[in-house]
Every structure is written in structure tokens, then in C-alpha cells.
Image 1: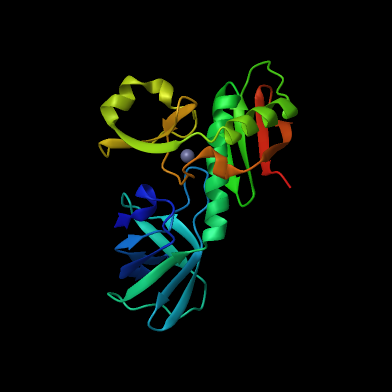
Image 2: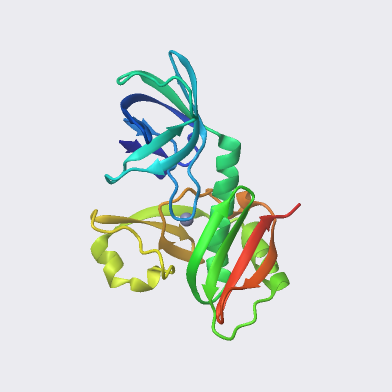
Length: 234
Ligand SMILES: [Zn+2]
């Protein structure tokens, strides 16, 4: 299966052949649909086939590496194996997720401490940080984030080998989620000089595309765990 979003997150649709269908959903030979993972929700959208549109309500990972399962709305007529469909994501939603996801990389650079968890949803996102004794300031973090956004830094994915990653364990910011290894290579997300870490998600090309954001609230989640909640500025 060719994962088009991995090389270009801006491609909204592709032509693909249906390779398998089971109770979990529909597999294609290539796709623009991002499957839920790394804190980012799965894409929604539509598969346009000969028998009409098939609404896709979620996208999840399968068991095999790079296996993507498109979850159809219940009760819709399914395509035939081998049929060619046009796979098209809900771009407006995906683009908001890409902007918010990229913003979380900036948040990693702004807040000291290891990341212990996180979640992205449509229009908002949060990261949990292990920050012993530190008081985090909402206004200060908001100002630092927006400065990095306005500076319009380039956001560039690149690949390194498992061995290179093993030599640089400091690249892994998340304590709970280790990057997938064993496939020989790891995808790094590089925001020039600001943040560099393994990430398989979808991102915007420049930080300026994120738009103005704000820290909505900072919650205490345990003695030294702080949850920073980000929203798009109204
Ligand atoms: Zn990322």
C-alpha cells in the first residue's frame, strides 16, 4: 500500500484499487487517508466508486506495517474487490489537524520537560509535560508560540536509519510513545533549529500556516505533570 500523505500531506485525493474488504473496513492499493496514530485522529472523507459515494467516517491502522483501513459509514453499499475508486479526504478538517499538529511541535520547543502524553482534535490539542517544580505561564507560552508561527519557519520531514536514531536518543521527546523501529528507517520532522523529533503525522510546510493560537488553559495532572491546552485564536 502506497501512503501518499507520508510524502505529501497536501494531496487531497488519489485514484486507487480496492484490494480487500472485511468487517473492519476497506483496504486500497494506495491512499491519501491518514490512519489514527501519534495523537492525530484518522481522516474522514469519501470513496467515489461506480456505485456512488462511500462515506468514510474514520481511518485506522491495520496489523501489517503500512496497512491502512478505511472505515465506511454503516449501511452504505460497499465497492467490489478490484474496483477503482477516487479516495478523497475531508480537506478542511485535515488541514486544521495539520496546523494543530505542527503547533504541538512548536509547543515541545517552548515548554521544557519530557512529553508524557498528547491528543489532537479538530480545532484544539493538548500535550502533557513532566515539569518538576516549574510553574508554566499561559501568556508567556502563547506569546512564544505565536512568535515562532509568525517567523514562518520551514517544516521538513526526512528519514534516518534506525542505527542513526539509536545514536541520538535525545531526539525522542515522548516518554510514553516510542517511534516505530525495526523497519530500517525512521521519519524525522525537522523545524529548522527549533524542533527535531521522530514523527509519522501530517504537518504544514511552514509554521506561518498554523495561524494565531492561544493557550486555553494549563491543568495540573499529578504532582509534576502539566497539561497545556492549545486552541486556534478566535
Ligand atoms: Zn508531528
